[in-house]
Length: 428
Image (cartoon, rainbow, N blue to C red; front, side):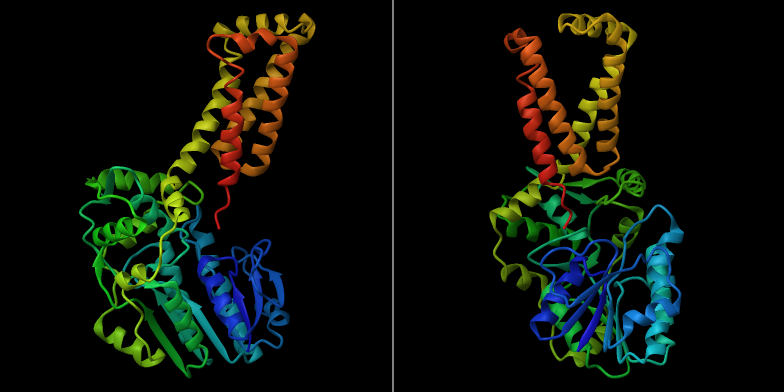
């Protein structure tokens, strides 16, 4: 089959593509920006789901397509309107175009629990589910529970980060809410089987084991190979504050949407399990079986340990640049700054311009890091500036290498920290 997959750079979409391509299907990838490397496809095009396309604009992309799998989804956005565009308005136009083009099959990736909570994420996903069910086209709506696998992204990475913290295992409250995790390999097999399902289907994609968030984290920590930790309960007030702040931080591991969805049991009932097994003729493995079937590696442990250190590194680097830029021009300190420029041989007439220009550069770097703007590019510029500072001071003020507080020698670990920050930037 020739299959169009939207959101092709996503964690689940890439796993689906890998399975379908290995089965001989021809993949057309739809992405927001540049397609990531090593994704098998025959063609690719860009579409911004936050700005809905008219129905007719989808038709050229659906030529010779047999099936469409919609994997586009975002867990949080600053504007609720954007969430509705991504989850409802754009898929609505795509689905209508599929009917017009007489596409054989639509598979829509929704989420388990969208009919249980009142958030923009859940209600917009649910609206798309309901609209698709009204159309005269074969369709399967797949509602996965918590998805895990050898790799991780989003919520699964957040859980790994929690499970990998040294000495402690923090839990959201008592963390007794039930989940029904599904291994990503079982999810992709389920989706492959859904391609040939006739009529309309709504499948709750879950594993066969129900367990609490607390049990999931304890098992995950053991799988990572870390010793037992002191379990602590994080008060609901702190969780709500963190979720509120997370709404405005790009790629934040916490948001109000996530907290609300984790606050209730997110499992399938017996009828939904029966429907799933009858449709795909297999039972997805349990969480325990899934973890036992994977071998954790040193890379898994690195990822878990670095999960919370990564943003902390960026924030501390932002602090250094902002502090350096601001402190240098404060009236109480600027006299020392001008003395340093004099010692370096900078003419008096150029000293104010030099001081304020360099301070402005430091502040701009700090703000870029603080707001997560083009980290790799900004890090590259910072490395150049650090090397430039070090070279100039070594030439003009070589005695600073012998300073008892080693202000120049500290540029070496700062440079390495910047390189580490750049290396950790990739989200996928």
